[in-house]
Length: 300
Image 1 (cartoon, rainbow, N blue to C red):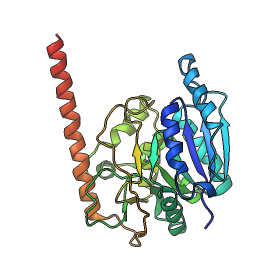
Image 2 (cartoon, rainbow, N blue to C red):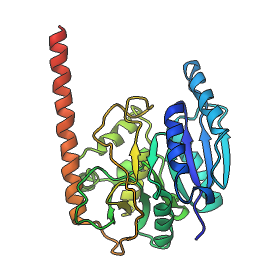
Image 3 (spheres, rainbow, N blue to C red):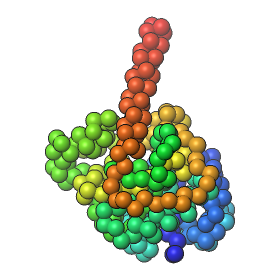
Image 4 (tube, one colour):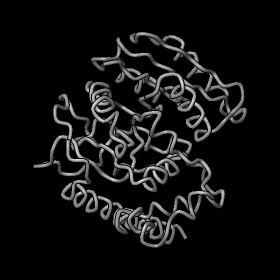
């Protein structure tokens, strides 16, 4: 099995980047894997110092078969950086594993990703391999299952799938009707469509929602582990696009994934538990909102 290249996108978080790399280096396939690191240029003078710290660190990274660093000379922003970086490496290698600078991986993450990319490489319906899963109860679930949404905290795909990526949100929107929007929103349990609308109005710049929409509109499915192999440590308010929330934090699986689902269909029981979790995030959101309002009232 030819191992997929790993792409790591970094910006201005030296501590998070170091934690991400240290966890990745502990993967059993790290020493056999090529690592490509894309470092975006500072957006403004305020970011220059932290970007410099990150670049100084990534130049010292060892423990991989090869480390290649691409330092951008101008700021692309996260979305453009990821889209262009994935496209460039994909053209040369045909498959990729993608990480950002705030993701702690299980020691068995790379093995799972590479085996998943090998098992489903010729299955046109499978478009995405995800390393993250919400902190759901995985009792009784298979080790892996298919789910419609493309989780992008540690993921992989193939050139055949990436060709379906539509970066123009205004081309994607007309492909959705009311029924498809409801399904895109996990049957109304979580409003992913609001990200599409905000992107179309220029309020956010998310590559991930465009990738999910591209996968969805092409009737694709995404493989997920029942027990997450990724923990996002960037949900502390330090990220460019993520606010502070701990509800998505999870413990990573510490044993290799041995079972890869052969039935290419969404797992109904896994979907039920995911819906239950997503519904709980809405409750948590409103509780936080109420607390903020109460605090403002007290301060007045």
